[in-house]
Amino acid sequence: MPEPSDWRCRRRTPSWSRVAPGRELVALLKPAHRVRVLARSPQPDPEVQWIKGDLGTGLGIPEAVAGARVVLHAATLSPAARRGYFLPADLWRSPPEVDVGGTRRLLDEAGRAGVAHFVYVSIVGAGRPRGPYLRLKHAAEELVHSGGVPWSIVRATQFHWLLDRMLGKAARLPALALPTTLTTQPADARDFAAYLLECVAAGPGEQRPDFGGPEVLALGDLVGQWQQVRGRTRPILKVPVPSRVARTAAEMTCPEGRRGTVTWSQWLRTPPAGGSLHRESVAARPGESLAVHVNGQDWLASWHPPLLPPNGTPHGAEGVCVTGDGELVLISQDGERWSFPAGRPEGSETWEDTLRREMREEACATVLRARLLGFSRGACVAGPEKGLVLVRSVWRAEVELGPWEPRFEIRHRRVVAAAQVMQHLTITTHPSAPIIRRTLHEAGIT
Image (cartoon, rainbow, N blue to C red):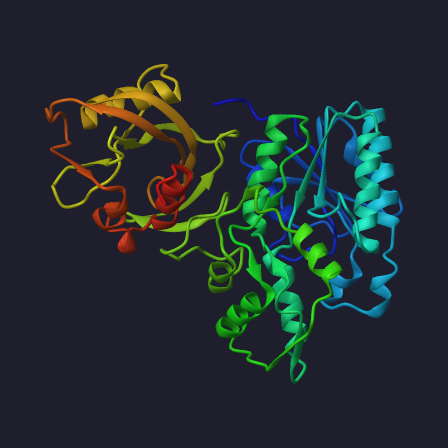
């Protein structure tokens, strides 16, 4: 396991809700890094060093940046997002204190501190800004370009939580007047946090690919799904869309960019962040806890991206083994309960060494090519092994099958079509179903 990085400074906007990427990113960083957060209202988290401050005034910035190797600037100030609805004044003015003034202050201090990587979170559409808020984001990006600190800019589309908040406010009216044909591409904040983590780990990349949700929706369809799930039906009055407004909306999507996994409908149907995850039909989100009860003990399981292994005791490797015909290899001890081949490390094996040996021993399969998908982490919170934290690497492995010669405790092998793997894994009753779904998604199976 690599040593924790000296990754000690990032900036969080005080107006984010509980599901914004700042909080999700901190959750992903904590297992492997030392994290310092500058915020107006520090939170009670002993695993994070909190610095009370404000980008708008400069308070706390020198203390937050001192000694940091990476600064992630994810703060913004949007009155419309904060209140959950637009006012006429938002069409011609947006306050610059945080997005422009704060960015300048943070860059200046980062330059003095010798920061190696400055990551700025922006908005899809900022490259061709229309409207005061987007113009501020564009101005901030220009400051980052010329700030003298190695940089990355990562743009995202609108987040699910913001649209949910705005629609909740609008539903107080007796009817909704909406430009229903406008295009949207809402993204999950947790998905974006995982992408940010990837960008941080990759080092300065300047303009990174834009990030958006997995689907582009017409606003009318998006609102229809919201009404159905939230049970707050209102008549919709369709408003004509000027061509310039339609172009602006389209420029705020990125169908060719990096896409998340959680759809708008799935997000609406899932419990809020912070609670236990019990949703077998949805893939686990990076860093999110999944309550699992196994062999009389309670565990918190989580999925982590491949670039930053979380802290814990290395617990081997698991392989999604794909044959030359595109079928998947499953193994079983009793012929009833099936799983992917996996096993613990021996001696000084690397993650990949363990994968290759275990696939030979458990599935009689030779690994031809392997791609690391991520890591699963389990922390025992109740039971005889309380305090134990185990980390397992998860791979997609292209394999060549040999003759079946059962060894050790594995007595059965089965090769199944990718479309049928869920059925064989009995995923609807599996305690770690969301992590299995995430594994298959990362492997390109579902």
